[in-house]
Image (cartoon, rainbow, N blue to C red; front, side):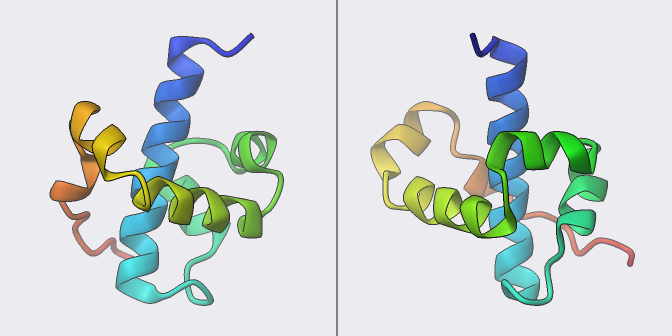
Length: 85
């Protein structure tokens, strides 16, 4: 059963991934960078999303639901700063 902490980490991963995909594109954004920026272990990200492609699909679905984003505080309104690589 998912916990609030798990849901919060998933949302953080999705929002961060969207920001990074917008900054660098899908091909140039690796799961390693997403893990680094979210401080969520890479293995945990794969446990949540199973693959980078699944994460991308989740991000696209998330962006198609603006009503839900507004009610959760819309993490997309505060763009991620460009990380130090």
